[in-house]
Amino acid sequence: AQSVTQLGSHVSVSEGALVLLRCNYSSSVPPYLFWYVQYPNQGLQLLLKYTSAATLVKGINGFEAEFKKSETSFHLTKPSAHMSDAAEYFCAVSVAGSARQLTFGSGTQLTVLP
Amino acid sequence: DADVTQTPRNRITKTGKRIMLECSQTKGHDRMYWYRQDPGLGLRLIYYSFDVKDINKGEISDGYSVSRQAQAKFSLSLESAIPNQTALYFCATSDSSSGRSNEQFFGPGTRLTVL
Image 1 (tube, helix red, strand yellow):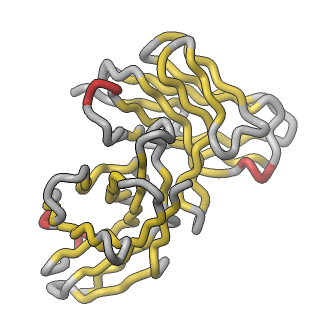
Image 2 (cartoon, each protein chain N blue to C red):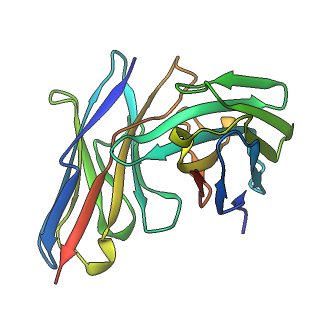
Image 3 (cartoon, rainbow over the protein chains, first blue to last red):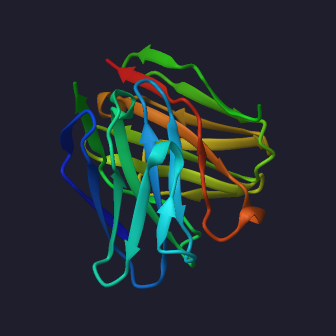
């Protein structure tokens, strides 16, 4: 079975600073990996996804993530945080053979300080 | 815009009451899902349906039931609500023909409080 660990349930950064949200996965087969964002009182929106093509994946709003098989990681980064980035971020994994269900991490709440 | 909608958006009910949450989608997707979100636990899968005649239990199906009335509609029922079912509930859809990754699209959520 696959699983996802997000290190840090709360992360605070200053506006303009680097955003780094950590995600590690466990899977016995090649995974598909996702980052979703949840703004207050809204559903989840896909930021980006890794589907075994390029290991560096670019998403919306300036976010990107790098798949590192040796580290079983898929960390999310953004060079310069904006106030509008404040939200909760979820990493998720799916694998072939599991009906391709998504398994979510516990989420990271990002606060952007002025 | 093709979308995923959920009704109601907020609901307060009492222990023992039967309640139904509804999900509709105009995306034309064949797969639909129900999740619950609890603080610190992320999203957990309750039920999923790959087509109208295919219903499957997820990780935490006890105390819940579902109905896929049509390709576009997927309802979640709590037959006898209990306080620990207080949570944020999300419906999601995906398209089996879109590739192997199973990208899912989420509704806005229903906040359920059981007193």
